[in-house]
Length: 86
Image 1 (cartoon, one colour):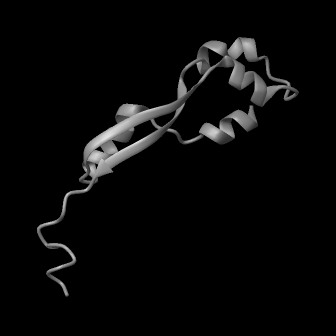
Image 2: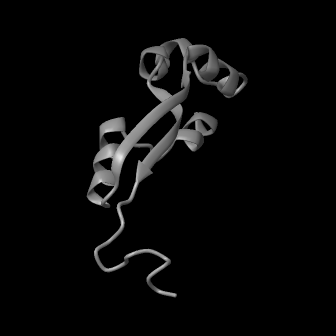
C-alpha cells in the first residue's frame, strides 16, 4: 500500500483544486485529464506488496487521475506589465 499511497498522498478532489486556484486569483481554470487510473494500475503497483487488490478495487477504480492544469492569473492593478516599469 505504501507504493500506491506514496503517489497519491495529499491529493485533492478536483473541485478543491479548482476552488484553491480561484481563491489564489486564477481565472479560466481548466483541468484536462491525461490518465484515469484503474484497478489494473493498482494491481501493477501493488503486486508483491501483500495487498489484496481486489478488496480495495472499489476505493481505487477510476478515482485518481493525472491531468494538465491550466489557469490564468490576471494582471494586478499594481502591476501594469513589463513595458511600464522600464
